[in-house]
Image 1 (cartoon, rainbow, N blue to C red):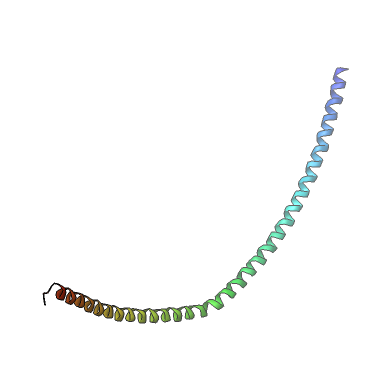
Image 2 (image 1 turned 180 degrees about the vertical axis):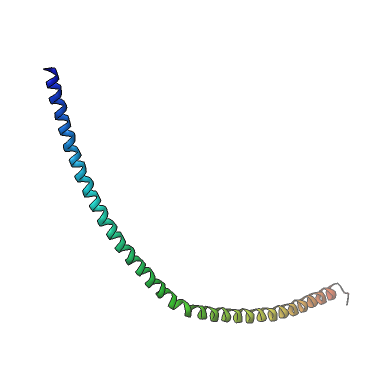
Length: 118
């Protein structure tokens, strides 16, 4: 009698395991379907992104070609203005030296007069 009860209990557990296995199989089938759909969507997104990137590349390449010549022109203008500024500062430096020498000369003249050297 105990063997029959044990056998019924084991059969109930086996039936339960079989139903759980059936649920697991259906869940795995659903997951496979979802993965297939995700792969298809990712492939579409990848194509769209590649097309967008290629479009952006062509958009950025077109203006950058003219940008190089504009940049070279701006650099040349900057060099010219810096050269002019350098010439002007050299001229001012010479003028400042002249005034400094004149001022020292006058100060020495005043000192020589004050100390009765002259």
